[in-house]
Amino acid sequence: MLGSRYARVALFLAAVVAVQLLAHAAEKPFFLTQLTMAAYYTLVAAGLSLLMGYAGQISLGHAAFFAIGGYASGYLTTVDLTARREGPLVAVLARLHVLVPHADLYGGEALSFHPWAAFAVAVVLTLAVAWLIGVPVLKLKGHYLAMATLGFGTIVYSILLASESLGAADGLGSVPPFPLLPGISVGGGRAARVANYYVAWGLVALALLVLSSLVESRVGRALRAIHGAEDAAASMGVDVARYKLKTFVLSAVLAAVGGSFLTHFNAGIGPAEAGVMKSVRYVAIVAVGGMGSLWGTVATSAVLTFLSLRGYFGTLDDAVFGAVLIAVMLFSPDGVLRFDPRGALRTARDRLRGSGVAG
Amino acid sequence: MSLLEVSGLSKRFGGLHAVKDVSFRVEKGTIKAIIGPNGAGKTTLFNLVSGVIPPDSGAVLLRGEEVNGCPPHRIAAMGVSRTFQQIRLFAQMTALENVMVGVHPRSRAGFLAGMFHLPWTWREERDIERRAREALELVGAADLAGADATSLSYGQQRSVELARAVAAEPELLLLDEPAAGLNMRETSELAKLIKRIRERGTTVLIVEHDMGLVMNVSDEVAVLSYGEKIADATPRAVQKDPEVIRVYLGDDAC
Ligand SMILES: Nc1ncnc2c1ncn2[C@@H]1O[C@H](COP(=O)(O)OP(=O)(O)OP(=O)(O)O)[C@@H](O)[C@H]1O
Ligand SMILES: [Mg+2]
Image (cartoon, rainbow over all chains, first blue to last red; front, side, top):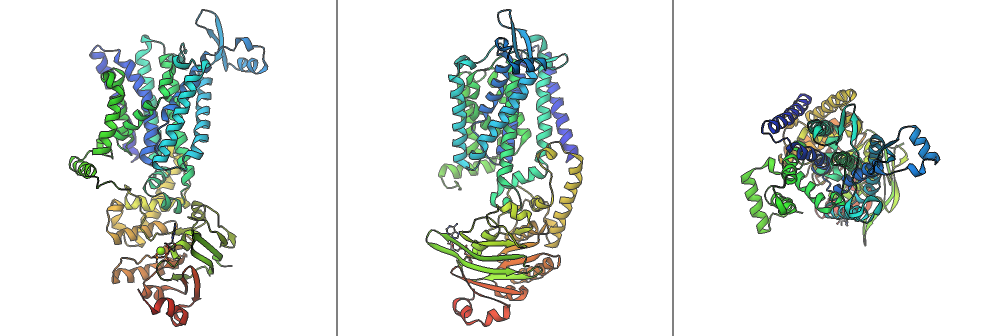
């Protein structure tokens, strides 16, 4: 089991390298930009796969967590605190290099949060929000949970859209690159394209390693048990509410990490990232990838998100994801990568006749 | 002190008094049966003891400690395990994985330990698997380990559920109609198995309609009728109790 996990991650990394070499050989280096963006969206899908596919809890609000991460990083690294320089808190933070001076839009100097500090705040903020939302909302099941998380997503979207300090409909721009390691920054234009591509997919590989370890652990079994029969899991000693909450928070934090990195990479973020259609998109990707298949979800996300970002779906972009969702639910509720054509036909026939709809 | 003491327990569902002022004790190391006609409140009583539903009034004491109001996972952690009248196996998991979940109260690897596959969890995982295989062996289902649990036959599913319930070597095991749907040979195997589980140090409280099984394995039998306890004595004495004969054995000995 252990061997196969590392082998899979190695295989995954080999595929990442192969795609980069292919893009290079085909003289389409600009593909790497969309591939890098796709990686950050894939982090959301991977976290959601854990929540939906393993713990069996749906969320139609994960785009909001992505946006919270992105906006927190974007806002804190662009807000100018120069005017409050004399305030005790600002002074201390500046002394600790949490706040750093940098060139602003007009060639002057601004005092803002260091991207690492902003990232830390983004993660902690998301953790807190997910916890606060998760406690009441996760008491709900099925459709009710879907509705409640949808409501949460809508609220976050509306707040972002209405906040002048967050750029309202325009969102945030001029977000500086994120100096991740010496010599490697997230963002920073064409020159850093290849490095950024590897940083992004390296992060996905790391997430995969961690999540697949979790899935194969005692906790992973408990999550699948909750999915299978919640009351029986509780009677076997599984603290169902706590496990659901922790899974929800973990997947939210992964989404926020994706949001934060993508905001630095793109040098900005807009309110559409928190939109309901984005949340539906993540759910569709998990559904296609296969409920309970992390690897299927990651592969699906990479392909569909890349195609979407390259504009292959044209004006039908959102419609494609909606249609995909309908098709999956009709033909293969367990996911396309576990597709069993004969079983699917049977299911679809039963459903269309209205007889196979169980509870 | 009794291992389990139930005192004055009541539960209403709307106008229906499903359990009405029921008190009884289960001594450590014994096998106690609860019998009664359909709808007498036996499963409700199990749900109250295992924390699935809270009582309206009364108390459940485990080793003298009041546990009513505790959520089911806390009660499980205190050494109470159960099976269900309607089989509740985990779908899309193998029989072995199902039983491994049963070891949950005896293991502790959490989210961080799982995510980072910490070395101390490797040993714990092996220990969980060993216990689970032993439990499957005990119920005679070792060869089913790799099978998808919900695709097994009814009798096999009952065995796996029992293995899951005993995998953590609970102090108190609640069995809700374990013989339902079993044939005579399987039922007599079950009787032996229940006695063997008691020998391993587990106290057993069993709800069962099969009188042969009840009279064979039990040290004590309590009888419920319309939510009320009408008798509580040795199997022999209960069989002779005129009230019991009237409400239960008399009209329809299922
Ligand atoms: N959740 C519930 N809501 C409403 N009524 C319930 C509920 N659970 C049980 N009841 C009712 O309470 C009464 C006792 O039910 P219970 O399942 O405890 O009986 P039982 O003794 O286990 O019966 P059986 O031998 O058929 O399993 C029944 O009339 C049942 O319909
Ligand atoms: Mg019952």
